[in-house]
Image 1 (cartoon, rainbow, N blue to C red):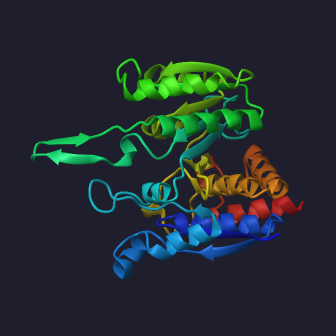
Image 2 (cartoon, helix red, strand yellow; image 1 turned 120 degrees about the horizontal axis):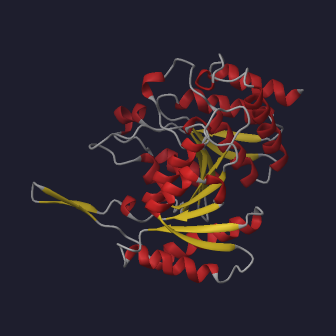
Image 3 (cartoon, rainbow, N blue to C red; image 1 turned 120 degrees about the vertical axis):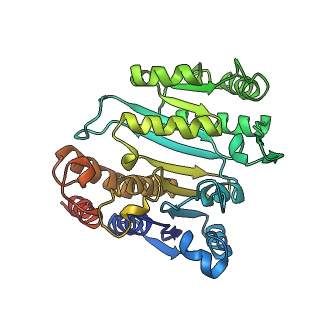
Length: 334
């Protein structure tokens, strides 16, 4: 059965890593009808926005998208294409796995953490304004509904994927109303999953414990801002953002993307590591019910990483972006 998927190449290195991921998916045995929809800085001149309506229409029609990184201006301009897409399609669950890879140099060997980040509320809701000219105020929005559905997603994910423990991450000792509500809701949801161990961690203590004993954590569920920061920390435990995939899940749509940014200085140089987006494509394929194709890709990637020779330059090899895609495809055919 063929699946309709919107491909958003993105900015900077986005088109290169997106093409690499597309080629790998096409070689995996999964049948995908790709609908390419351009977004990002290249669209500003024609449409006056980095997120044209045609992109939203394509994602809405297909229900699934694979997205390359898109540049977000700092301090000025359009707020964020990523945030806009999450709000438009209510992609409330951001899922970011971080695990150790054999052959990838890091300080740890046994990390296997899944960050489940609430994706629509908190300070990222963008409710902010200036107070005169010398002060700015951002409003931290946490709702019972938003907290319950992300907590339930985390526990359901743990059950479905054979995970043993969910850790609720918060700062309720200081933000007693907002984070207090998030913690209260997580406790309530946890009571309905007696087979899953539940624990609570204050976010600063969690960060310390992650760099001391990351192997003690399994699934983390966090409000939006903490989830963004902690997921990057977790990526650092296992080799960096070049290996960090993610999924944005809602009830009517899902968008899969690498965690890393667009790295515009590397655009067109064929030196970006496409592994994160390739692994994001594996998450997409499993979402589509194409588990066998995802397993073929993942096994090939893991074998190349373990070998340590046919990898990209950032991992000590000599392959460019397109050459690494070639290597993954060749490995799948062995």
